[in-house]
Image (cartoon, helix red, strand yellow):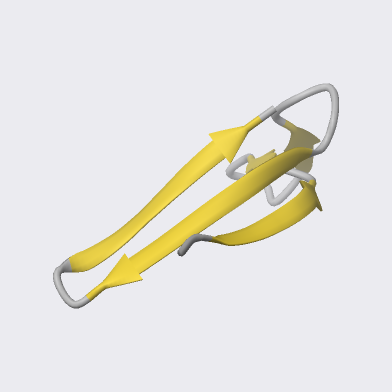
Length: 44
């Protein structure tokens, strides 16, 4: 079962360290882990 993180703010980070929002509104992250790896899904 996926672990859901709601109202996550996603930002980009420039070379000078400034953070800029990637999306206009918060997103939901669904995270699934299994022994072969991890998958992360962004939902708006």
